[in-house]
Length: 128
Length: 363
Image (tube, rainbow over all chains, first blue to last red; front, side, top):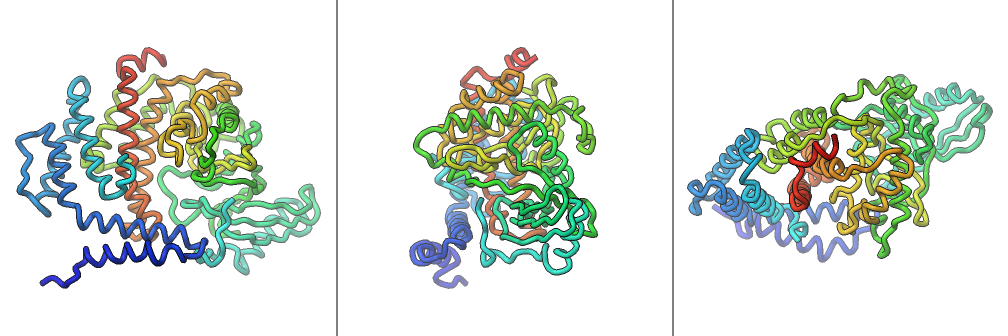
């Protein structure tokens, strides 16, 4: 059974209230800590809201290399495990030298898309 | 410097009661003084790893008689893999200061746990602005500041492993690139098999490793945020806790990495000026030419090093070793650091890549 508002809803309103109503009144010596709190709340909010979407973006990025393993129907733990398995496979291939001489352009596109998906949660401002 | 008020965080009881008395006695003996009084002026920022206390030493008698504004730098709670002990840091600071580098003058170093419990040293306090966002705020570029930082780094890099007094630092690496790669593999451990960006960075370093060349004393955290500026001029180079022997181009790559450009990513030398200004100052004093291909190699290494440190900081929090929101958030910086590394690798590859030309150019 889910309470209403749920964890996501609570975080969202807590983060926006903190930024709008608390942060402007924080004393200068506590401002750095307050900004960190706001940042942490917003990361948590984006993660709760967007983890599956990020997982699908990562799967899409890995599909550039491993088309046959992409699967849009996955979610939650199954999605996470699939992304982890493909990332592990890619790590092994990279370490074995499979991209030393060719395929670097596709690899770079794929790595950038993977990092962009994670940045969308941890720091969207750094995407620009 | 950024003094943190007492109400900000609970200051550790490093100089409480008996500690202060023991410190004053120890200092009097070291300074050949009849009496030393230590006054605490507050805790200083910039100490994610070390503990920095602003202190005033009032010395009566002996060659250092007088009042001295100083910083007491002690081992913090969580030492991380890349950092060296406080006494080694003291020895390095002494060597750098003697070589004419604008480092705060080191006065006393102590590794006797009976005094404060931790290793610590005391250096003179420099004035100026340190925070990266503040230093990179100016609309105009600061070419003279970049040039002076280059000159300072050049002076430091004249110190070689056979310099007197540096025996405590241990053996200099035969091949800094290989040594660094092995160290990164240890630091990342399992992450190198789970995160393909880290795996690619490590592989890239392996394939593009330059031939061994000069090995000198490097600062290894020489960047905007770790020096002080007053009225636009450099006053001191700080944070020597990662120093050690390495390829001189490592410090140049670190300084120019995107991670330390703060408000001005377009100003490639530390967010303050162009690389050319920084490199020119370096060549004035170092006695060697800057090797851009080698700097590019070490810039890739810089992103991986910063990534490894960020991961370790995050784990310091998550493991419960040191609960801290700042450490936790540092752990979440990994994707940002990785993106900077990928942007750098794209730029290197647009210039024709490293693998074919690097060895030829640097050999």
